[in-house]
Image 1 (cartoon, rainbow, N blue to C red):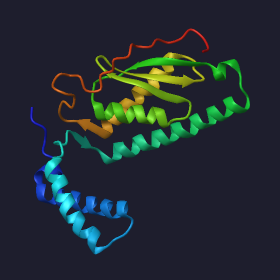
Image 2 (spheres, one colour):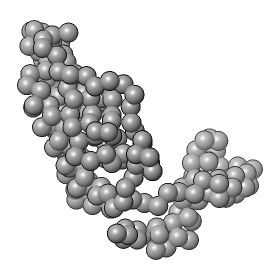
Image 3 (cartoon, rainbow, N blue to C red):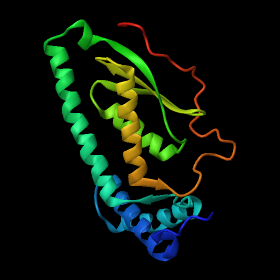
Image 4 (cartoon, one colour):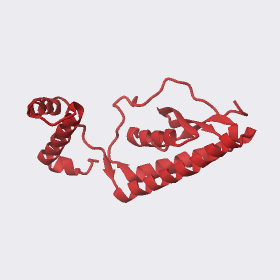
Length: 195
C-alpha cells in the first residue's frame, strides 16, 4: 500500500526552496555574520549540497495534538524523575539507590519512534538508554531506584504509544535487510538486587 503524499512531495519546489532558505540561514550562523562573500559562497555550496544529498521520502504522518501530548507527558516525567533523583541524593536508602537494567520490548522496529523514545528515556533523570535493538524490537534501560521492572516496561510502552500517535509510520523505515538499528550486544536481564 502506497503512503499518502506529504506536503513536501505535493509541492517539491516549495519544499526545496524552504530547505535552501533554512540552510542559508544556518550558513550565516556558522560563519558568524551576514556578508556578500558569505551570501555568494552559500549560493554556491547550498545548491550543490541539496543536489548531492537528496532527502528521503517522508515516511511518517505528524499529528500536532499528539506531539503536544507527548511533550506534556515528557515534561511531567522530567519533573517527577528530577524529584525522585533529588530525594535519592538527599536521603539515600538502599531502595532509592538500587540500580538495574530492564529490557523493554517495543511493538514495532520503527527507527524514528525508537530514537525518540530512547532519547526521552536518556533525558529523564534516573534513567539511561543503553541499547536499542530491532530484532526483536526492544530498548535496554538502566534505572536508578529500580522497583518493579514491569513498571519501567509500562512507562516505556506508554512513551512508545504516545510517540506512535505523534508520528505515525506510513512505510517500513528499516533497511532492506532489516538491520537498521540492530545491535551486536547481548541482551541484559533484570538484576536480582542492587549493583
